[in-house]
Image (tube, rainbow, N blue to C red):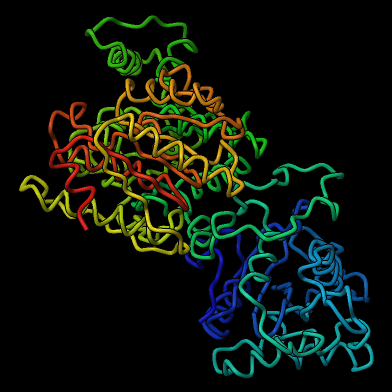
Length: 614
């Protein structure tokens, strides 16, 4: 069974009956290693082939599907078709020519890439795999076609080897027969299967929107946006640089309405959110709202949205900044309802919405990242902000990372806050961010902490590793903070010798005073750094700023770095001796590291024993 992207049940309403029939046959009858994309724009020119089929053992096939009826074809040449529609006779491109043009426009994206070229022989410099194109006439039988075009005419206008007819896709036709007809459209047989690297490279070129942290093609390109050979990367991005097929399926198949994604740390939730923003920005007239709790994460999301040129269509805020924006937008004053300024902001917005002084349904869609950090009453307000007609809302969470609210899971039903997603929840267990060693250490540490208390009775979604191998996390238990600092300095020197830039490394600490101490140490050793301590600092966080970033642990949520040092990790004062709360914060800190993790501690307590336990 092939992989169909998007899923058939999420196809839009405008899809023709013939296209659905073809999609079902391709999904059910092609080999399981096949990837089949339906009606997805290719490259910066945004061409839309009906189907692209990538078979690692065969090659690349482009298909156009026509639901035409034979009696409605008024005239037919090798270039054009005159077809009788309800509104009269219209002229269309010959479907074989349409398929050919679409195929060659897509192949141009691949031909400039040396890694996809033949390296030796008479065809050196040409693509190293076969490709082809063809047409499926879902409502015209072979007999009907033969009756209107003699053999010689068919060869010139609709070559039989490039055309599949209605009787070729009937349910009674075997999978083998259909496969043979499809693969006969390819120019030659592939000598060796395409590697996973080449498959991902093809996907990288075809679909810029699934790239991660690499140069993006504009979503709304100009004529000059086609990449030149010098724009192409020397090596394909690794798994953290491109969606894997399962992530792509989910991102493209979310559909309309309310959706929930319950995913472990590093499972690609934020990546899917960004893709969803790209899609919604194209189809909605109202702006899209992206909300999270963490200020630093909001800065990262805003940066990624800007990379895609969507800042005018997509608004990104942390929750309380959004509340401030709403008051400013509607020229309303903050009510003084408590001693908590942040709570006053929310209470004010809630009051003015109830008074209809702040409009509801302001957004075509609302997307909520790290939803486990938001209170139920906040979500009640946010769900009122999405337009009822489009009804698009995406809520993403991971209860293991709930560190701002003292609860072991969401603590409320999603329906109670207006999220109507029954039967539309997706669970993501695969962790793509962390090396297997870091994930294993982090997961086992969290489980030990939960097992050590009788408080935690709720099962937490357990991550499964899809990451790479790397070094084991380094745990350094010493006698004082100054000794921790010496260990960190040695470790930093090692990271730099590996060729890492300062921005690829981070120091995470439990308290501001710990961060300030390490700032003094870094300053004395002339190490460029910046402590993102205050809200105004976090809003300015730029992942491209080549200084060593320091964060208090909660502020690092949603971020990731090649190498992370978690310092003073057995500190308990800030969590008032709550082991579970401390463990969840440390779990967040540990899983910020993609490749290398250093954990230092000097205080002897129960938390220290959990960290260092084997």
